[in-house]
Figure 1 (spheres, rainbow, N blue to C red):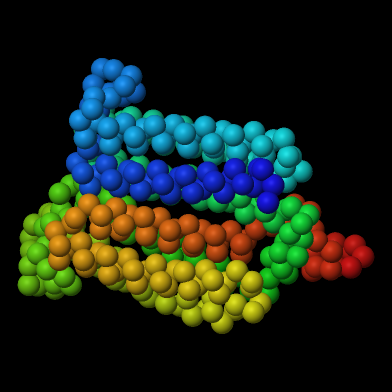
Figure 2 (cartoon, one colour):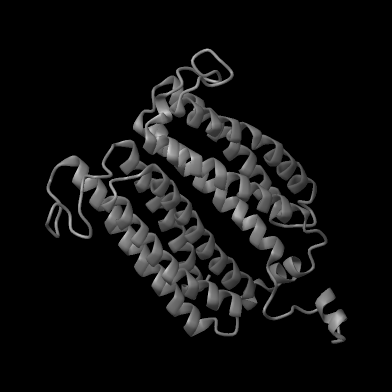
Length: 315
């Protein structure tokens, strides 16, 4: 694996770490540990108390990820100019991560409104998708991985990727309302799981309604996850990536449901709250990978593919 590919993959992993630290900020109530931005309580260095240190660590890691995104774009311009998808995706990721930083600042300046906090989380997932797209493109276009590029170009079906896109759209709604629920204080509105205060339906209370909408969406997600897992497993011999990704999504969904229930039963301890967000990010990461592997169009057409034959080139 070449330096540019390693940097792109490391940036993906660092973004997941950043998402986890953001979850720690929310779980510990440290979002206003630094009530100003970009300074922390008026200084460059945060005070030694818990909340400012946690909030400032999120900002610090965010800055590191931003530099890594820029570095990935630089390596794309140096080594992958012949791959427009890698080049321009890496380039667009730079202002996108800048927007994410600005959204973080707005979150602090406006004192953590739930809608902006939830949008901040989804934007982080979009940044993660862009960096994953850069890595996959760089990896596939490496001459050492020509067999994988050929397999992607000759993929006999796009149904797995289509289901992955549908899953991502649904997961966006689940995660947004989950982020809103956590910041609005609705997490503890329902005592018990799967019922809410002994009822299938929420009472006429905004927080109960918010909480149960999240549960309903998460529960209904099974009707997309199961078909994705089944189809991915069936296509595992024709799509080299489908089997592992299908298993991963199934395991992550089951783990997410279990952790969600445990959160309610044990009143949202920090470790379970953070795990809930990280598992969701890993599910997003896997589904985005499946979508990208399905719809990626090679910059250089491998030999012996339908692309060559349609173009009239020798097979």
